[in-house]
Image (cartoon, rainbow, N blue to C red; front, top):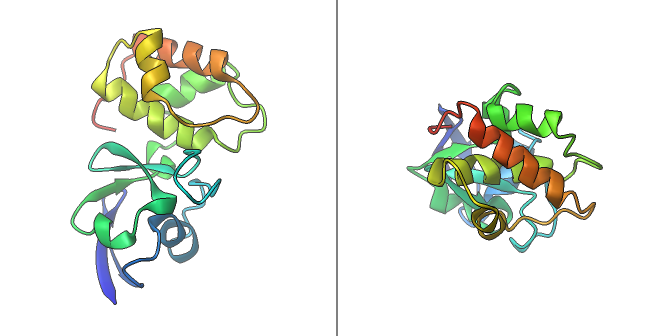
Length: 153
């Protein structure tokens, strides 16, 4: 089936099955490998991307549901986003595998809550980090909140 998707601001025409998870379209069809496969059931958040600005777990989202919506991946942040810079400054990554999903979740959280409390961070970031860097994640989110964050990213 032919489907047109808006990925990182670019229209992409693809021939894929409508039930194929968005994750595999991003990784295998488009080569956007920053979005990671973790659990395959939408529980861990390693595959988090934005769909019309909202964080979604792409491993369990059929590509058909992304039709007509804006999909934003970690690649679109470009490495210089205030959240990414705060991640580096707080030395958040340990193994790093979950980090792209964490960063995408944090960007969405800061868009909804520009100065989040610890409780809002805990409620808004449901991604899992096997290395347990949650205190550093929280520090980085607070630091990014103090920076000028592009709320449209």
